[in-house]
Length: 287
Length: 252
Image: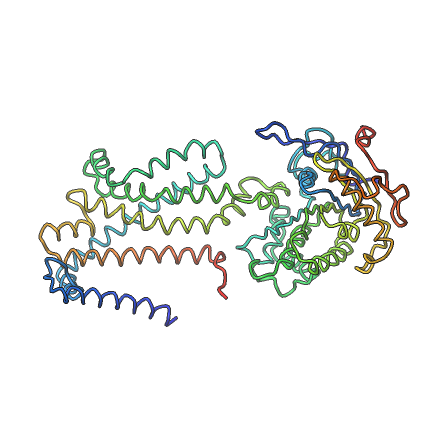
């Protein structure tokens, strides 16, 4: 299967007063069409920079980001974005917030058609009846649902999410995981999710990519071999427990603290297929 | 609704009663301090002058404010989008704002001799554009990048992002500044009317009351000014409710 998103040895540094601050230093990842990639890593490791590169909002200093094999140099309309902050426009109703991308992407689409599309999505995430409400009248979880609808209303083939569930309480977050899972069934797209939550990465992801601490490189990739329509119960199985354990150890390595047993386990746990623990070596190999 | 009207009305009545009371208790004659009961006579005698003066004061204030809104928005946009412009203009603006505007009255009077209307509008403008420019500038420059990104990631142009997001998002700040600016513009207009000779408007009427030692007239003008100020202020509040009412959270 070809990768819809292909990131090869991407490097990027921010120019600051104290000189260049490298944030990405050899990030590699490939996301096959229709699959879900979860990216985890220590805080401040440059994960958000990665989303901006994929969205074409920034260009990397070196390396390449390709969508459909084409190099990304500027924003493209086939991308949808959601952030930790739902950034809904307070002066618009929920319905009009969801419609916003269509005003840019499909300016000729009749109003009724736009509304129908937005209503359909709002119903999918359980927000029917809230179309005419203002964002300030909704709870945090509901706002994030609306934000997800806005991200996919124009049927993007790539959905980029930067910790969209990060600011929610645990139960609301689990609700939204299930919403996300169901959304993917009716609105298929290739997803990149940045998260701090390992359970979230395993529940939603088809692969989990662990980035090292800043400057970030791809440290570890885990294929999540779980059924498509997983339920929350799966998180309490032995299999997933083992996967979480491996990821946890990888995060510790990324934080520079070393895993409990000083080395990543030699054998990947059942149900996952580790594609290799990369030291600085992976970047070299990719070149 | 009844409470909204009755409470402020009662407060005003209480204030007038208190004023009347201290004047009577102290036995001040009206050339020391006029009391509310002296005012109706003054209004009745000079009502035509009050109407003319109010109109002159009002239209010049609004004209100056309109200029301030245009210029302030423009300046705020420049400062909001360009760091260089912000760095360059800020000290200039702050310095200009710090100059007591009364000192500018003779300057303007000499620059544009005899252009009384023009001078007054200009002063109302000069005194009131600053808060508008600053708030719009700050509002635009502090727009969270995610707001821009949701449209920028779709390839929207800068103009579109400004029209759909930055401008409406800045409206509450703009109206906050406009409430300050409307009062300032009003003060600017009156300043010129009172300080410059052969003035017009309510300020000139105040000055003539002073010249003729007609103290009830002076106080009547002050009250008229207060009423006009209230009218202007609530006009802005009404505009705010209409265009930025979404920013008002429902009170629970």
